[in-house]
Length: 69
Image (cartoon, rainbow, N blue to C red; front, side, top):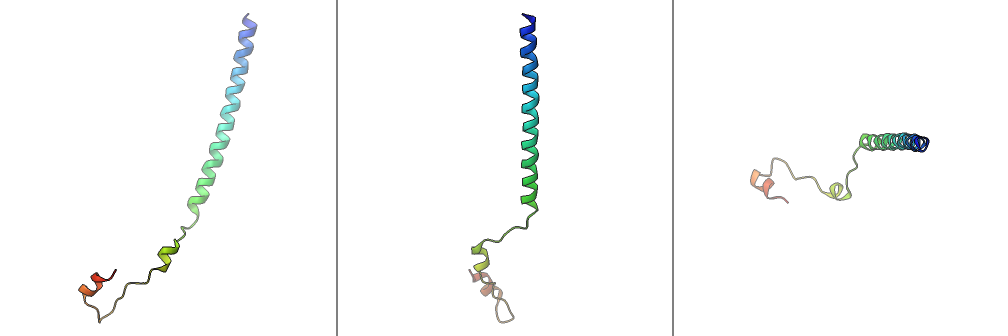
């Protein structure tokens, strides 16, 4: 009887170790992918690049500058 309990405990231990190692590998790969994506420069959206620059110059008063969309 004790042999059966010992065998199941040993199997459970190996299963726990195997699952732990797989979990560690998955978490390491996920962290690496997140670090690579965070290191890439941010892309500008298309709507942001279409905006025209705000008008400026000596001919515009501050009221005209604030009234621009």
